[in-house]
Length: 143
Image (cartoon, rainbow, N blue to C red; front, side, top):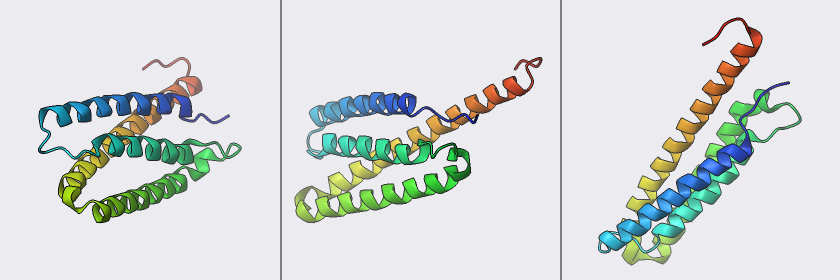
């Protein structure tokens, strides 16, 4: 039976990260209102939702075929995320020209933070799973 990264565990981490990000954006809006876009909390909400959705695509179990399709599912999730981000960014910039520069900068910073967080967590989980698999294959060896 193949192991996979638990969706619930990753979802919880995304929600905690999003709560921290929301707190930081509110703090930034309070401390530097002239530099902050009023849409900062909505950017965090957008990334929380899109990250949960794309992670579901990557980590769902297709009846035991998750390992075979991990790379293609990951690439599909990246494409969905990029196009969703471009659509969201374009619509906001077109509808709110006065806030477009602050919004675009904040959007790109938050995009980078979420992407970095996602990669770090996925790599850590994959390494933990590899360590558990190695321990099960060679129970006499300890790391």
